[in-house]
Length: 58
Image 1 (cartoon, helix red, strand yellow):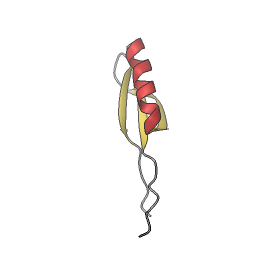
Image 2 (cartoon, one colour):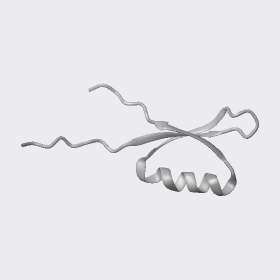
Image 3 (tube, one colour):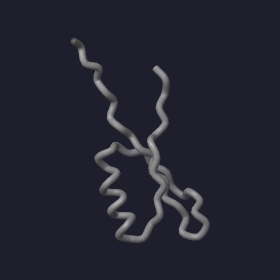
Image 4 (cartoon, one colour):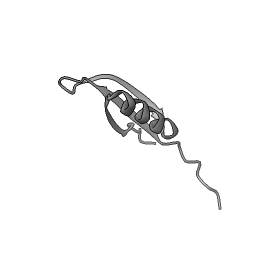
């Protein structure tokens, strides 16, 4: 049985403006980095929007 190599999970993280909540910066990271970024944002009170990064059909 051949196992398919799964792609690592990627997430888009948008830093949101403190006043109106509009995205001011966007980055795509692997799943392992999400926790670190969330912890940093929590420590500084920064607002984030996190969602799965877009995928392309193969």
